[in-house]
Image 1 (tube, one colour):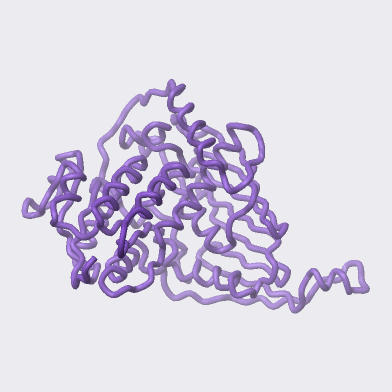
Image 2 (cartoon, rainbow, N blue to C red; image 1 turned 180 degrees about the horizontal axis):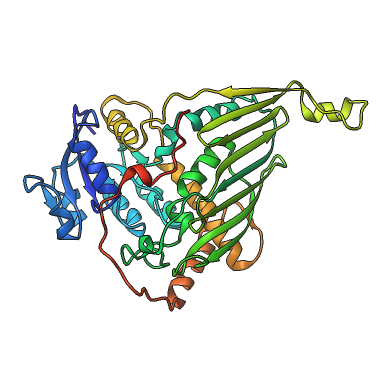
Length: 395
């Protein structure tokens, strides 16, 4: 693949998030990139863009047009895999919206297509925009650099993803097994699940309790409580829903050297002066505890979010800059989501790595046996990024 000075980007699916990505490029907010084409199966969505723009109704035509160097995919979830594979088969760079696929088996198919590319491979990234948030970056550094010592417990209550019934009625693909492949775990929580594994690593087993259509007229999960076990003996709890308001977003990570708490845009590190594990073994008092330092970690801004991921993608193609979110990382959040749903369906603990074929069979059974019918569907509206994502605000 020859070196290029400007990336010609084609965006597939411009009715929601993809439309926002396309406009960010059009407005000159993504250095080293030019919006060369857009694609959507809905003519009314394409009409939102100036007629001077090169438009396609079929992603296969756009990919083979010779007009684009890279493809950004922001379609309903199942198409991420098929359009992604077609992009790789034609040697183009790829940036996928989350999740990269609905289930692990499709992730593996996507990776297989990538691995078949001979010679210099195109770049493959995923839209994990919350990785650009400084407060999450600093929390990760506390864990990865050993400031918390051995991790013993991880808890994330992320119930601030409130969505109305109107949201789910916005498009016939939403909140169905056949159209979206899941609910809160596949739509909102890929960001949180990615951050969780990015910061603390993957658990080795999962036991989850998902409620399907608890708060909404949908057939997929809108309320989840999950228990994790890690290979070092640490445990974790992950709670998520789209049915609670005002909701909570609190991430707490405890280690032998203290705990870090992220809530209300504030990261606090409560540091033990000595290891709690060693202190417990050596103290001569039954009720003593290590002395602590309360450390507030300042954060000055909220990061570049979607635009930073787009800019990083283009810069990586032109200048070789390392990717913030490599596409292969996307399989981990998918695997966690799949494991939670499978644990609920089977009523037992799921060992990781997940058997991808087992989950695929379970999902196909849900689709085959579904009797759910949407009572009403409204036309999709452009997405307002300011209210869509739970990004911690700098204090």
